[in-house]
Length: 96
Image 1 (cartoon, one colour):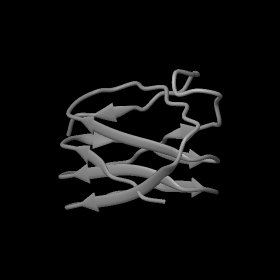
Image 2 (cartoon, rainbow, N blue to C red):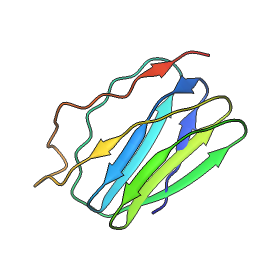
Image 3 (cartoon, one colour):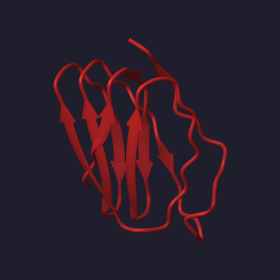
């Protein structure tokens, strides 16, 4: 998996992927997001400080994460028929 996240503040995120998906996230403040993707994904992580992350991947995934401060991220991804499928899932972020 390849994950890359761009963040200048504090974030919590959990990532569970049972499918292929591509995800790119930029955050400077508070965010709630519902992401359900049924495509190839790959995860890559770049961090200049402290980070905690739980990632479960049974397939290829593409995700970019850039962090200049503290970050925790919880992201849940489930298989959906299309990229337009959205379900209840939120990402809580805090400004450091």
